Length: 351
Ligand SMILES: NC(=O)c1ccc[n+]([C@@H]2O[C@H](COP(=O)([O-])OP(=O)(O)OC[C@H]3O[C@@H](n4cnc5c(N)ncnc54)[C@H](O)[C@@H]3O)[C@@H](O)[C@H]2O)c1
Ligand SMILES: [Zn+2]
Image 1 (cartoon, rainbow, N blue to C red):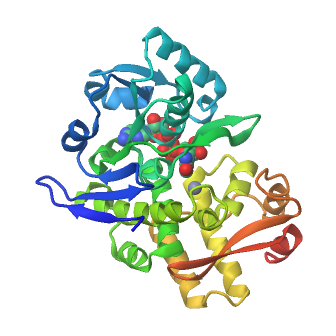
Image 2: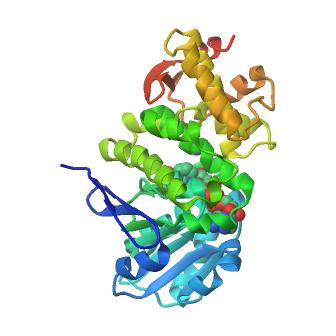
């Protein structure tokens, strides 16, 4: 069997383990319990950001560490250059283990630094944001932005391990927490109707403090992504499913700074569900369940810019191949299809 998942009971909180690509595992559980077992007997250098250092200094200060700045503007070759220089100063060598502790920006950069420093050293992550835990830290994509385009330089390389400790999410802002919820709802629509049902029943006002419910939800969302990555690591087929709602979301992020990624994904999910209904692929009832869940999770589903303007921005998407575009359409809660179509046809669906 080339994919497995299992559950291990622990004293503090349920631990879940998901194996990806033989060499990598994602664990949902306590950092204090899991880290000593997972760290190899090697020198460790931590890469983190200044925010995480403020909240989790006692963890980070146990190791030599390199701190990066905050936001997408830090996700650059310039930051990478700074990291390489500090690794050299610290006399890190090929036997050094790099531990990225942070959200998606830290893990994307730390993964790429580790994949390229001295032609590659071993690395692992403690993923600290909800979006990081269910999406960014899982699947082996890493890299930096270039010339205004996201993730243009990077590699596919799986970390040895990813630890997702939901108790670290209590220091995350409510807005960043909600950003991760959009990707979890997306995972439910793509491949897990039970996860979607659990979200429909959950109390979003208390979820951030409900470790047991949160651990289970995070695990289910990771499993959706891990399962897809197992089948298609390099995004030549099924991995495209993970882009559900993202064509419109990227256009929203391009046209307006009002919404962060998750907020834009929520709008994109709602729009694509409505389009799928118009095309006769998704029942009106399922589309309505998607809308209601997104609203209950606290998302504003009104696009911040006119749809006409959003559609114009899609022209410039670097990931569009020629005149065609891959679009993910939901067919029910828990199942989606990928259709390749001319851009013009995609745009016409919104008329
Ligand atoms: N590699 C992939 O497959 C993949 C997938 C999705 C997204 N991404 C990337 O992930 C990035 C976004 O990740 P993100 O949303 O985690 O953003 P982020 O890394 O910027 O984290 C969001 C903010 O929350 C802070 N933070 C993180 N954890 C915290 C905690 N526990 N307590 C307090 N503050 C905390 C961070 O310091 C940051 O200010 C983007 O660059 C995106 O391209 C990558
Ligand atoms: Zn996303």
